[in-house]
Length: 395
Image 1 (tube, rainbow, N blue to C red):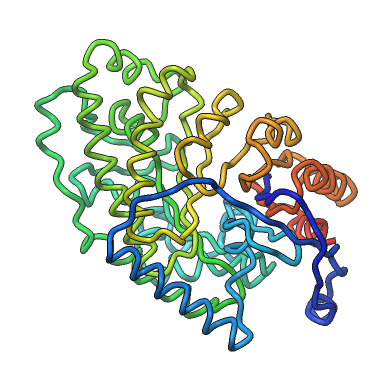
Image 2: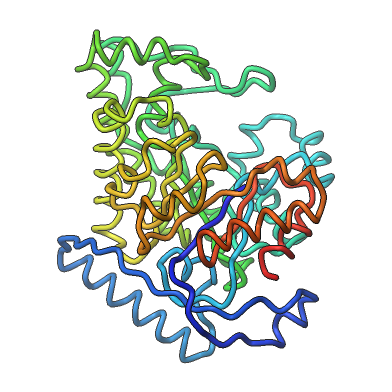
């Protein structure tokens, strides 16, 4: 479980009726300010897109319809309360999902069929009304559209039967065929239409390094021996693979944004398996390139970066240009805030095991996180007592 936080709570007003109608306690009033200090070189088309986005926001504000709370928090803008969402929002903890999985047992079918994607994505939203609705998908979903097929075994997880370990094998890959990912675009557009402005629609991608671990190892790994050997014995092959994935996933980020994603999260899930020095060589520059491409075309759309076991990487993650830095529960929120500075929205980091401990423990964990980080957006990984979690986040 974790949170998004914007720094320096100030004073603000809150519309009391909305929360009372929802049957929730009135949250504390606060206001936040944020500045990334980052400058980007933008072309004329990007500036036009930026102006069009600002005009659209102005029209929404004039109509009394602000952008979703989570989006404003991710940008560091004033927010009325801590938004909350669940990273693994759809899943087996819900009976509706289990019933659907019996009817459609293949994960690939569930995650690559528009109607099923939309239905599964909306199950937790309809049950709990979180502030973020994350697309039901997988970081490996775009791989077949660039010539890297995979399957998912219920017990073993992802399986790539022909892993890439040599220069000759690189030739089998081809530029991303977005027409083969139409189910992603269709799902995002339908979700935007169904959810409206009640919550933010979140898309996500895997980082080039994390995707490469699957492509090179052939699946999940405990020690990453093959790809780490490649770092030293065949660096040119790994560099070529990472560069290729960077270009394709950057386009995939843009595709998700242009089809309705309010926010896109980059999962460098296995970045924490690298030493900080190796992360600087094999992960950071490729993440930076992806962010630069996405920001050059959609500069106002927030991008979040999350890595498991990233306690030794926080300052480096900040330097990538990501708008929001994700933390796991092994990092103390107060330490992270001190290391990252007051001007970076953070996402983190209540221990997900608290969801098994009851409402009192959940409330204590959320309040501790909020107190250390400032206003937060909470997310959890294995939702059990979600109602209690959400109440704690807004109380």
